[in-house]
Length: 343
Image (cartoon, rainbow, N blue to C red; front, top):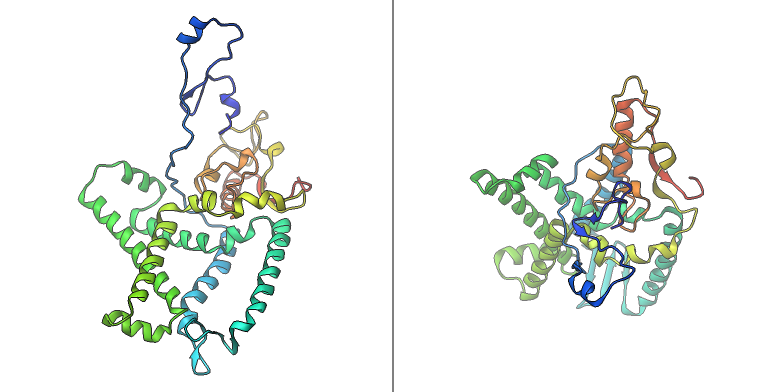
């Protein structure tokens, strides 16, 4: 982590003491010199996100929910006497509505993967990580789990106080309700996934009657557990450390790639102030340093420090900042989608 401007002259960064550079020293001086220990691995700090509404979040609803509903509903749809989407591995048939694919048709899958790879480079170079922010299953499922968390444990401040409070009957009830909802939705996710490979109508009867095959119970359990861990516990860790997309995206970015940006020339110098009719002190920029952009970020970054690989282009910070600008009477889009050339 780089020190901020107000940390530049400090001898501490994030609680770690810095060792001054010694130009001349003897063996005795070196023996008595205090040595700081630095950890190679940074312990994860839990991110408490604040809910926000805005224009881009409405777009996320229209992109995420259709994919989610399609995933949950397609296996139940019957089409010309068979399941609409069914990957029947024992029979070596893939049904996708009126299309039936056989093993010799895998060359079509190869062509599809090649086209998808080129499309990945194309859309990333134009729109950045737009897939991550709006349609990635990890983003959609994490948003649902976060919504469940807010319904059971309350707002951001309430969740922070709840975690800091000692264990009580209310805390146990809230935690139990949250994890019960998580596990229920994770089970639904795993069950539906297996339903894409086994006729889901038959699977439903066999599963709940206890007559399903062992493999069915095993795979439903595995996918349910993975969903519970990824969307409930790991969350942003999947995007930062497990997904390779965040790591090699820099090779696909250029000066015309659409990214979430902060207008530093307009926003600096930051500072709180009393606002009256949109006026501001002469020595301050438009940023009132409310930290709302950080509090809504699902990966916990401060986009005001510049583009970072953790940013998934979800525009939550844009909606949060625009809501603040509207309240204080300043022009919108202090944070916005823009390009390096556009800035």
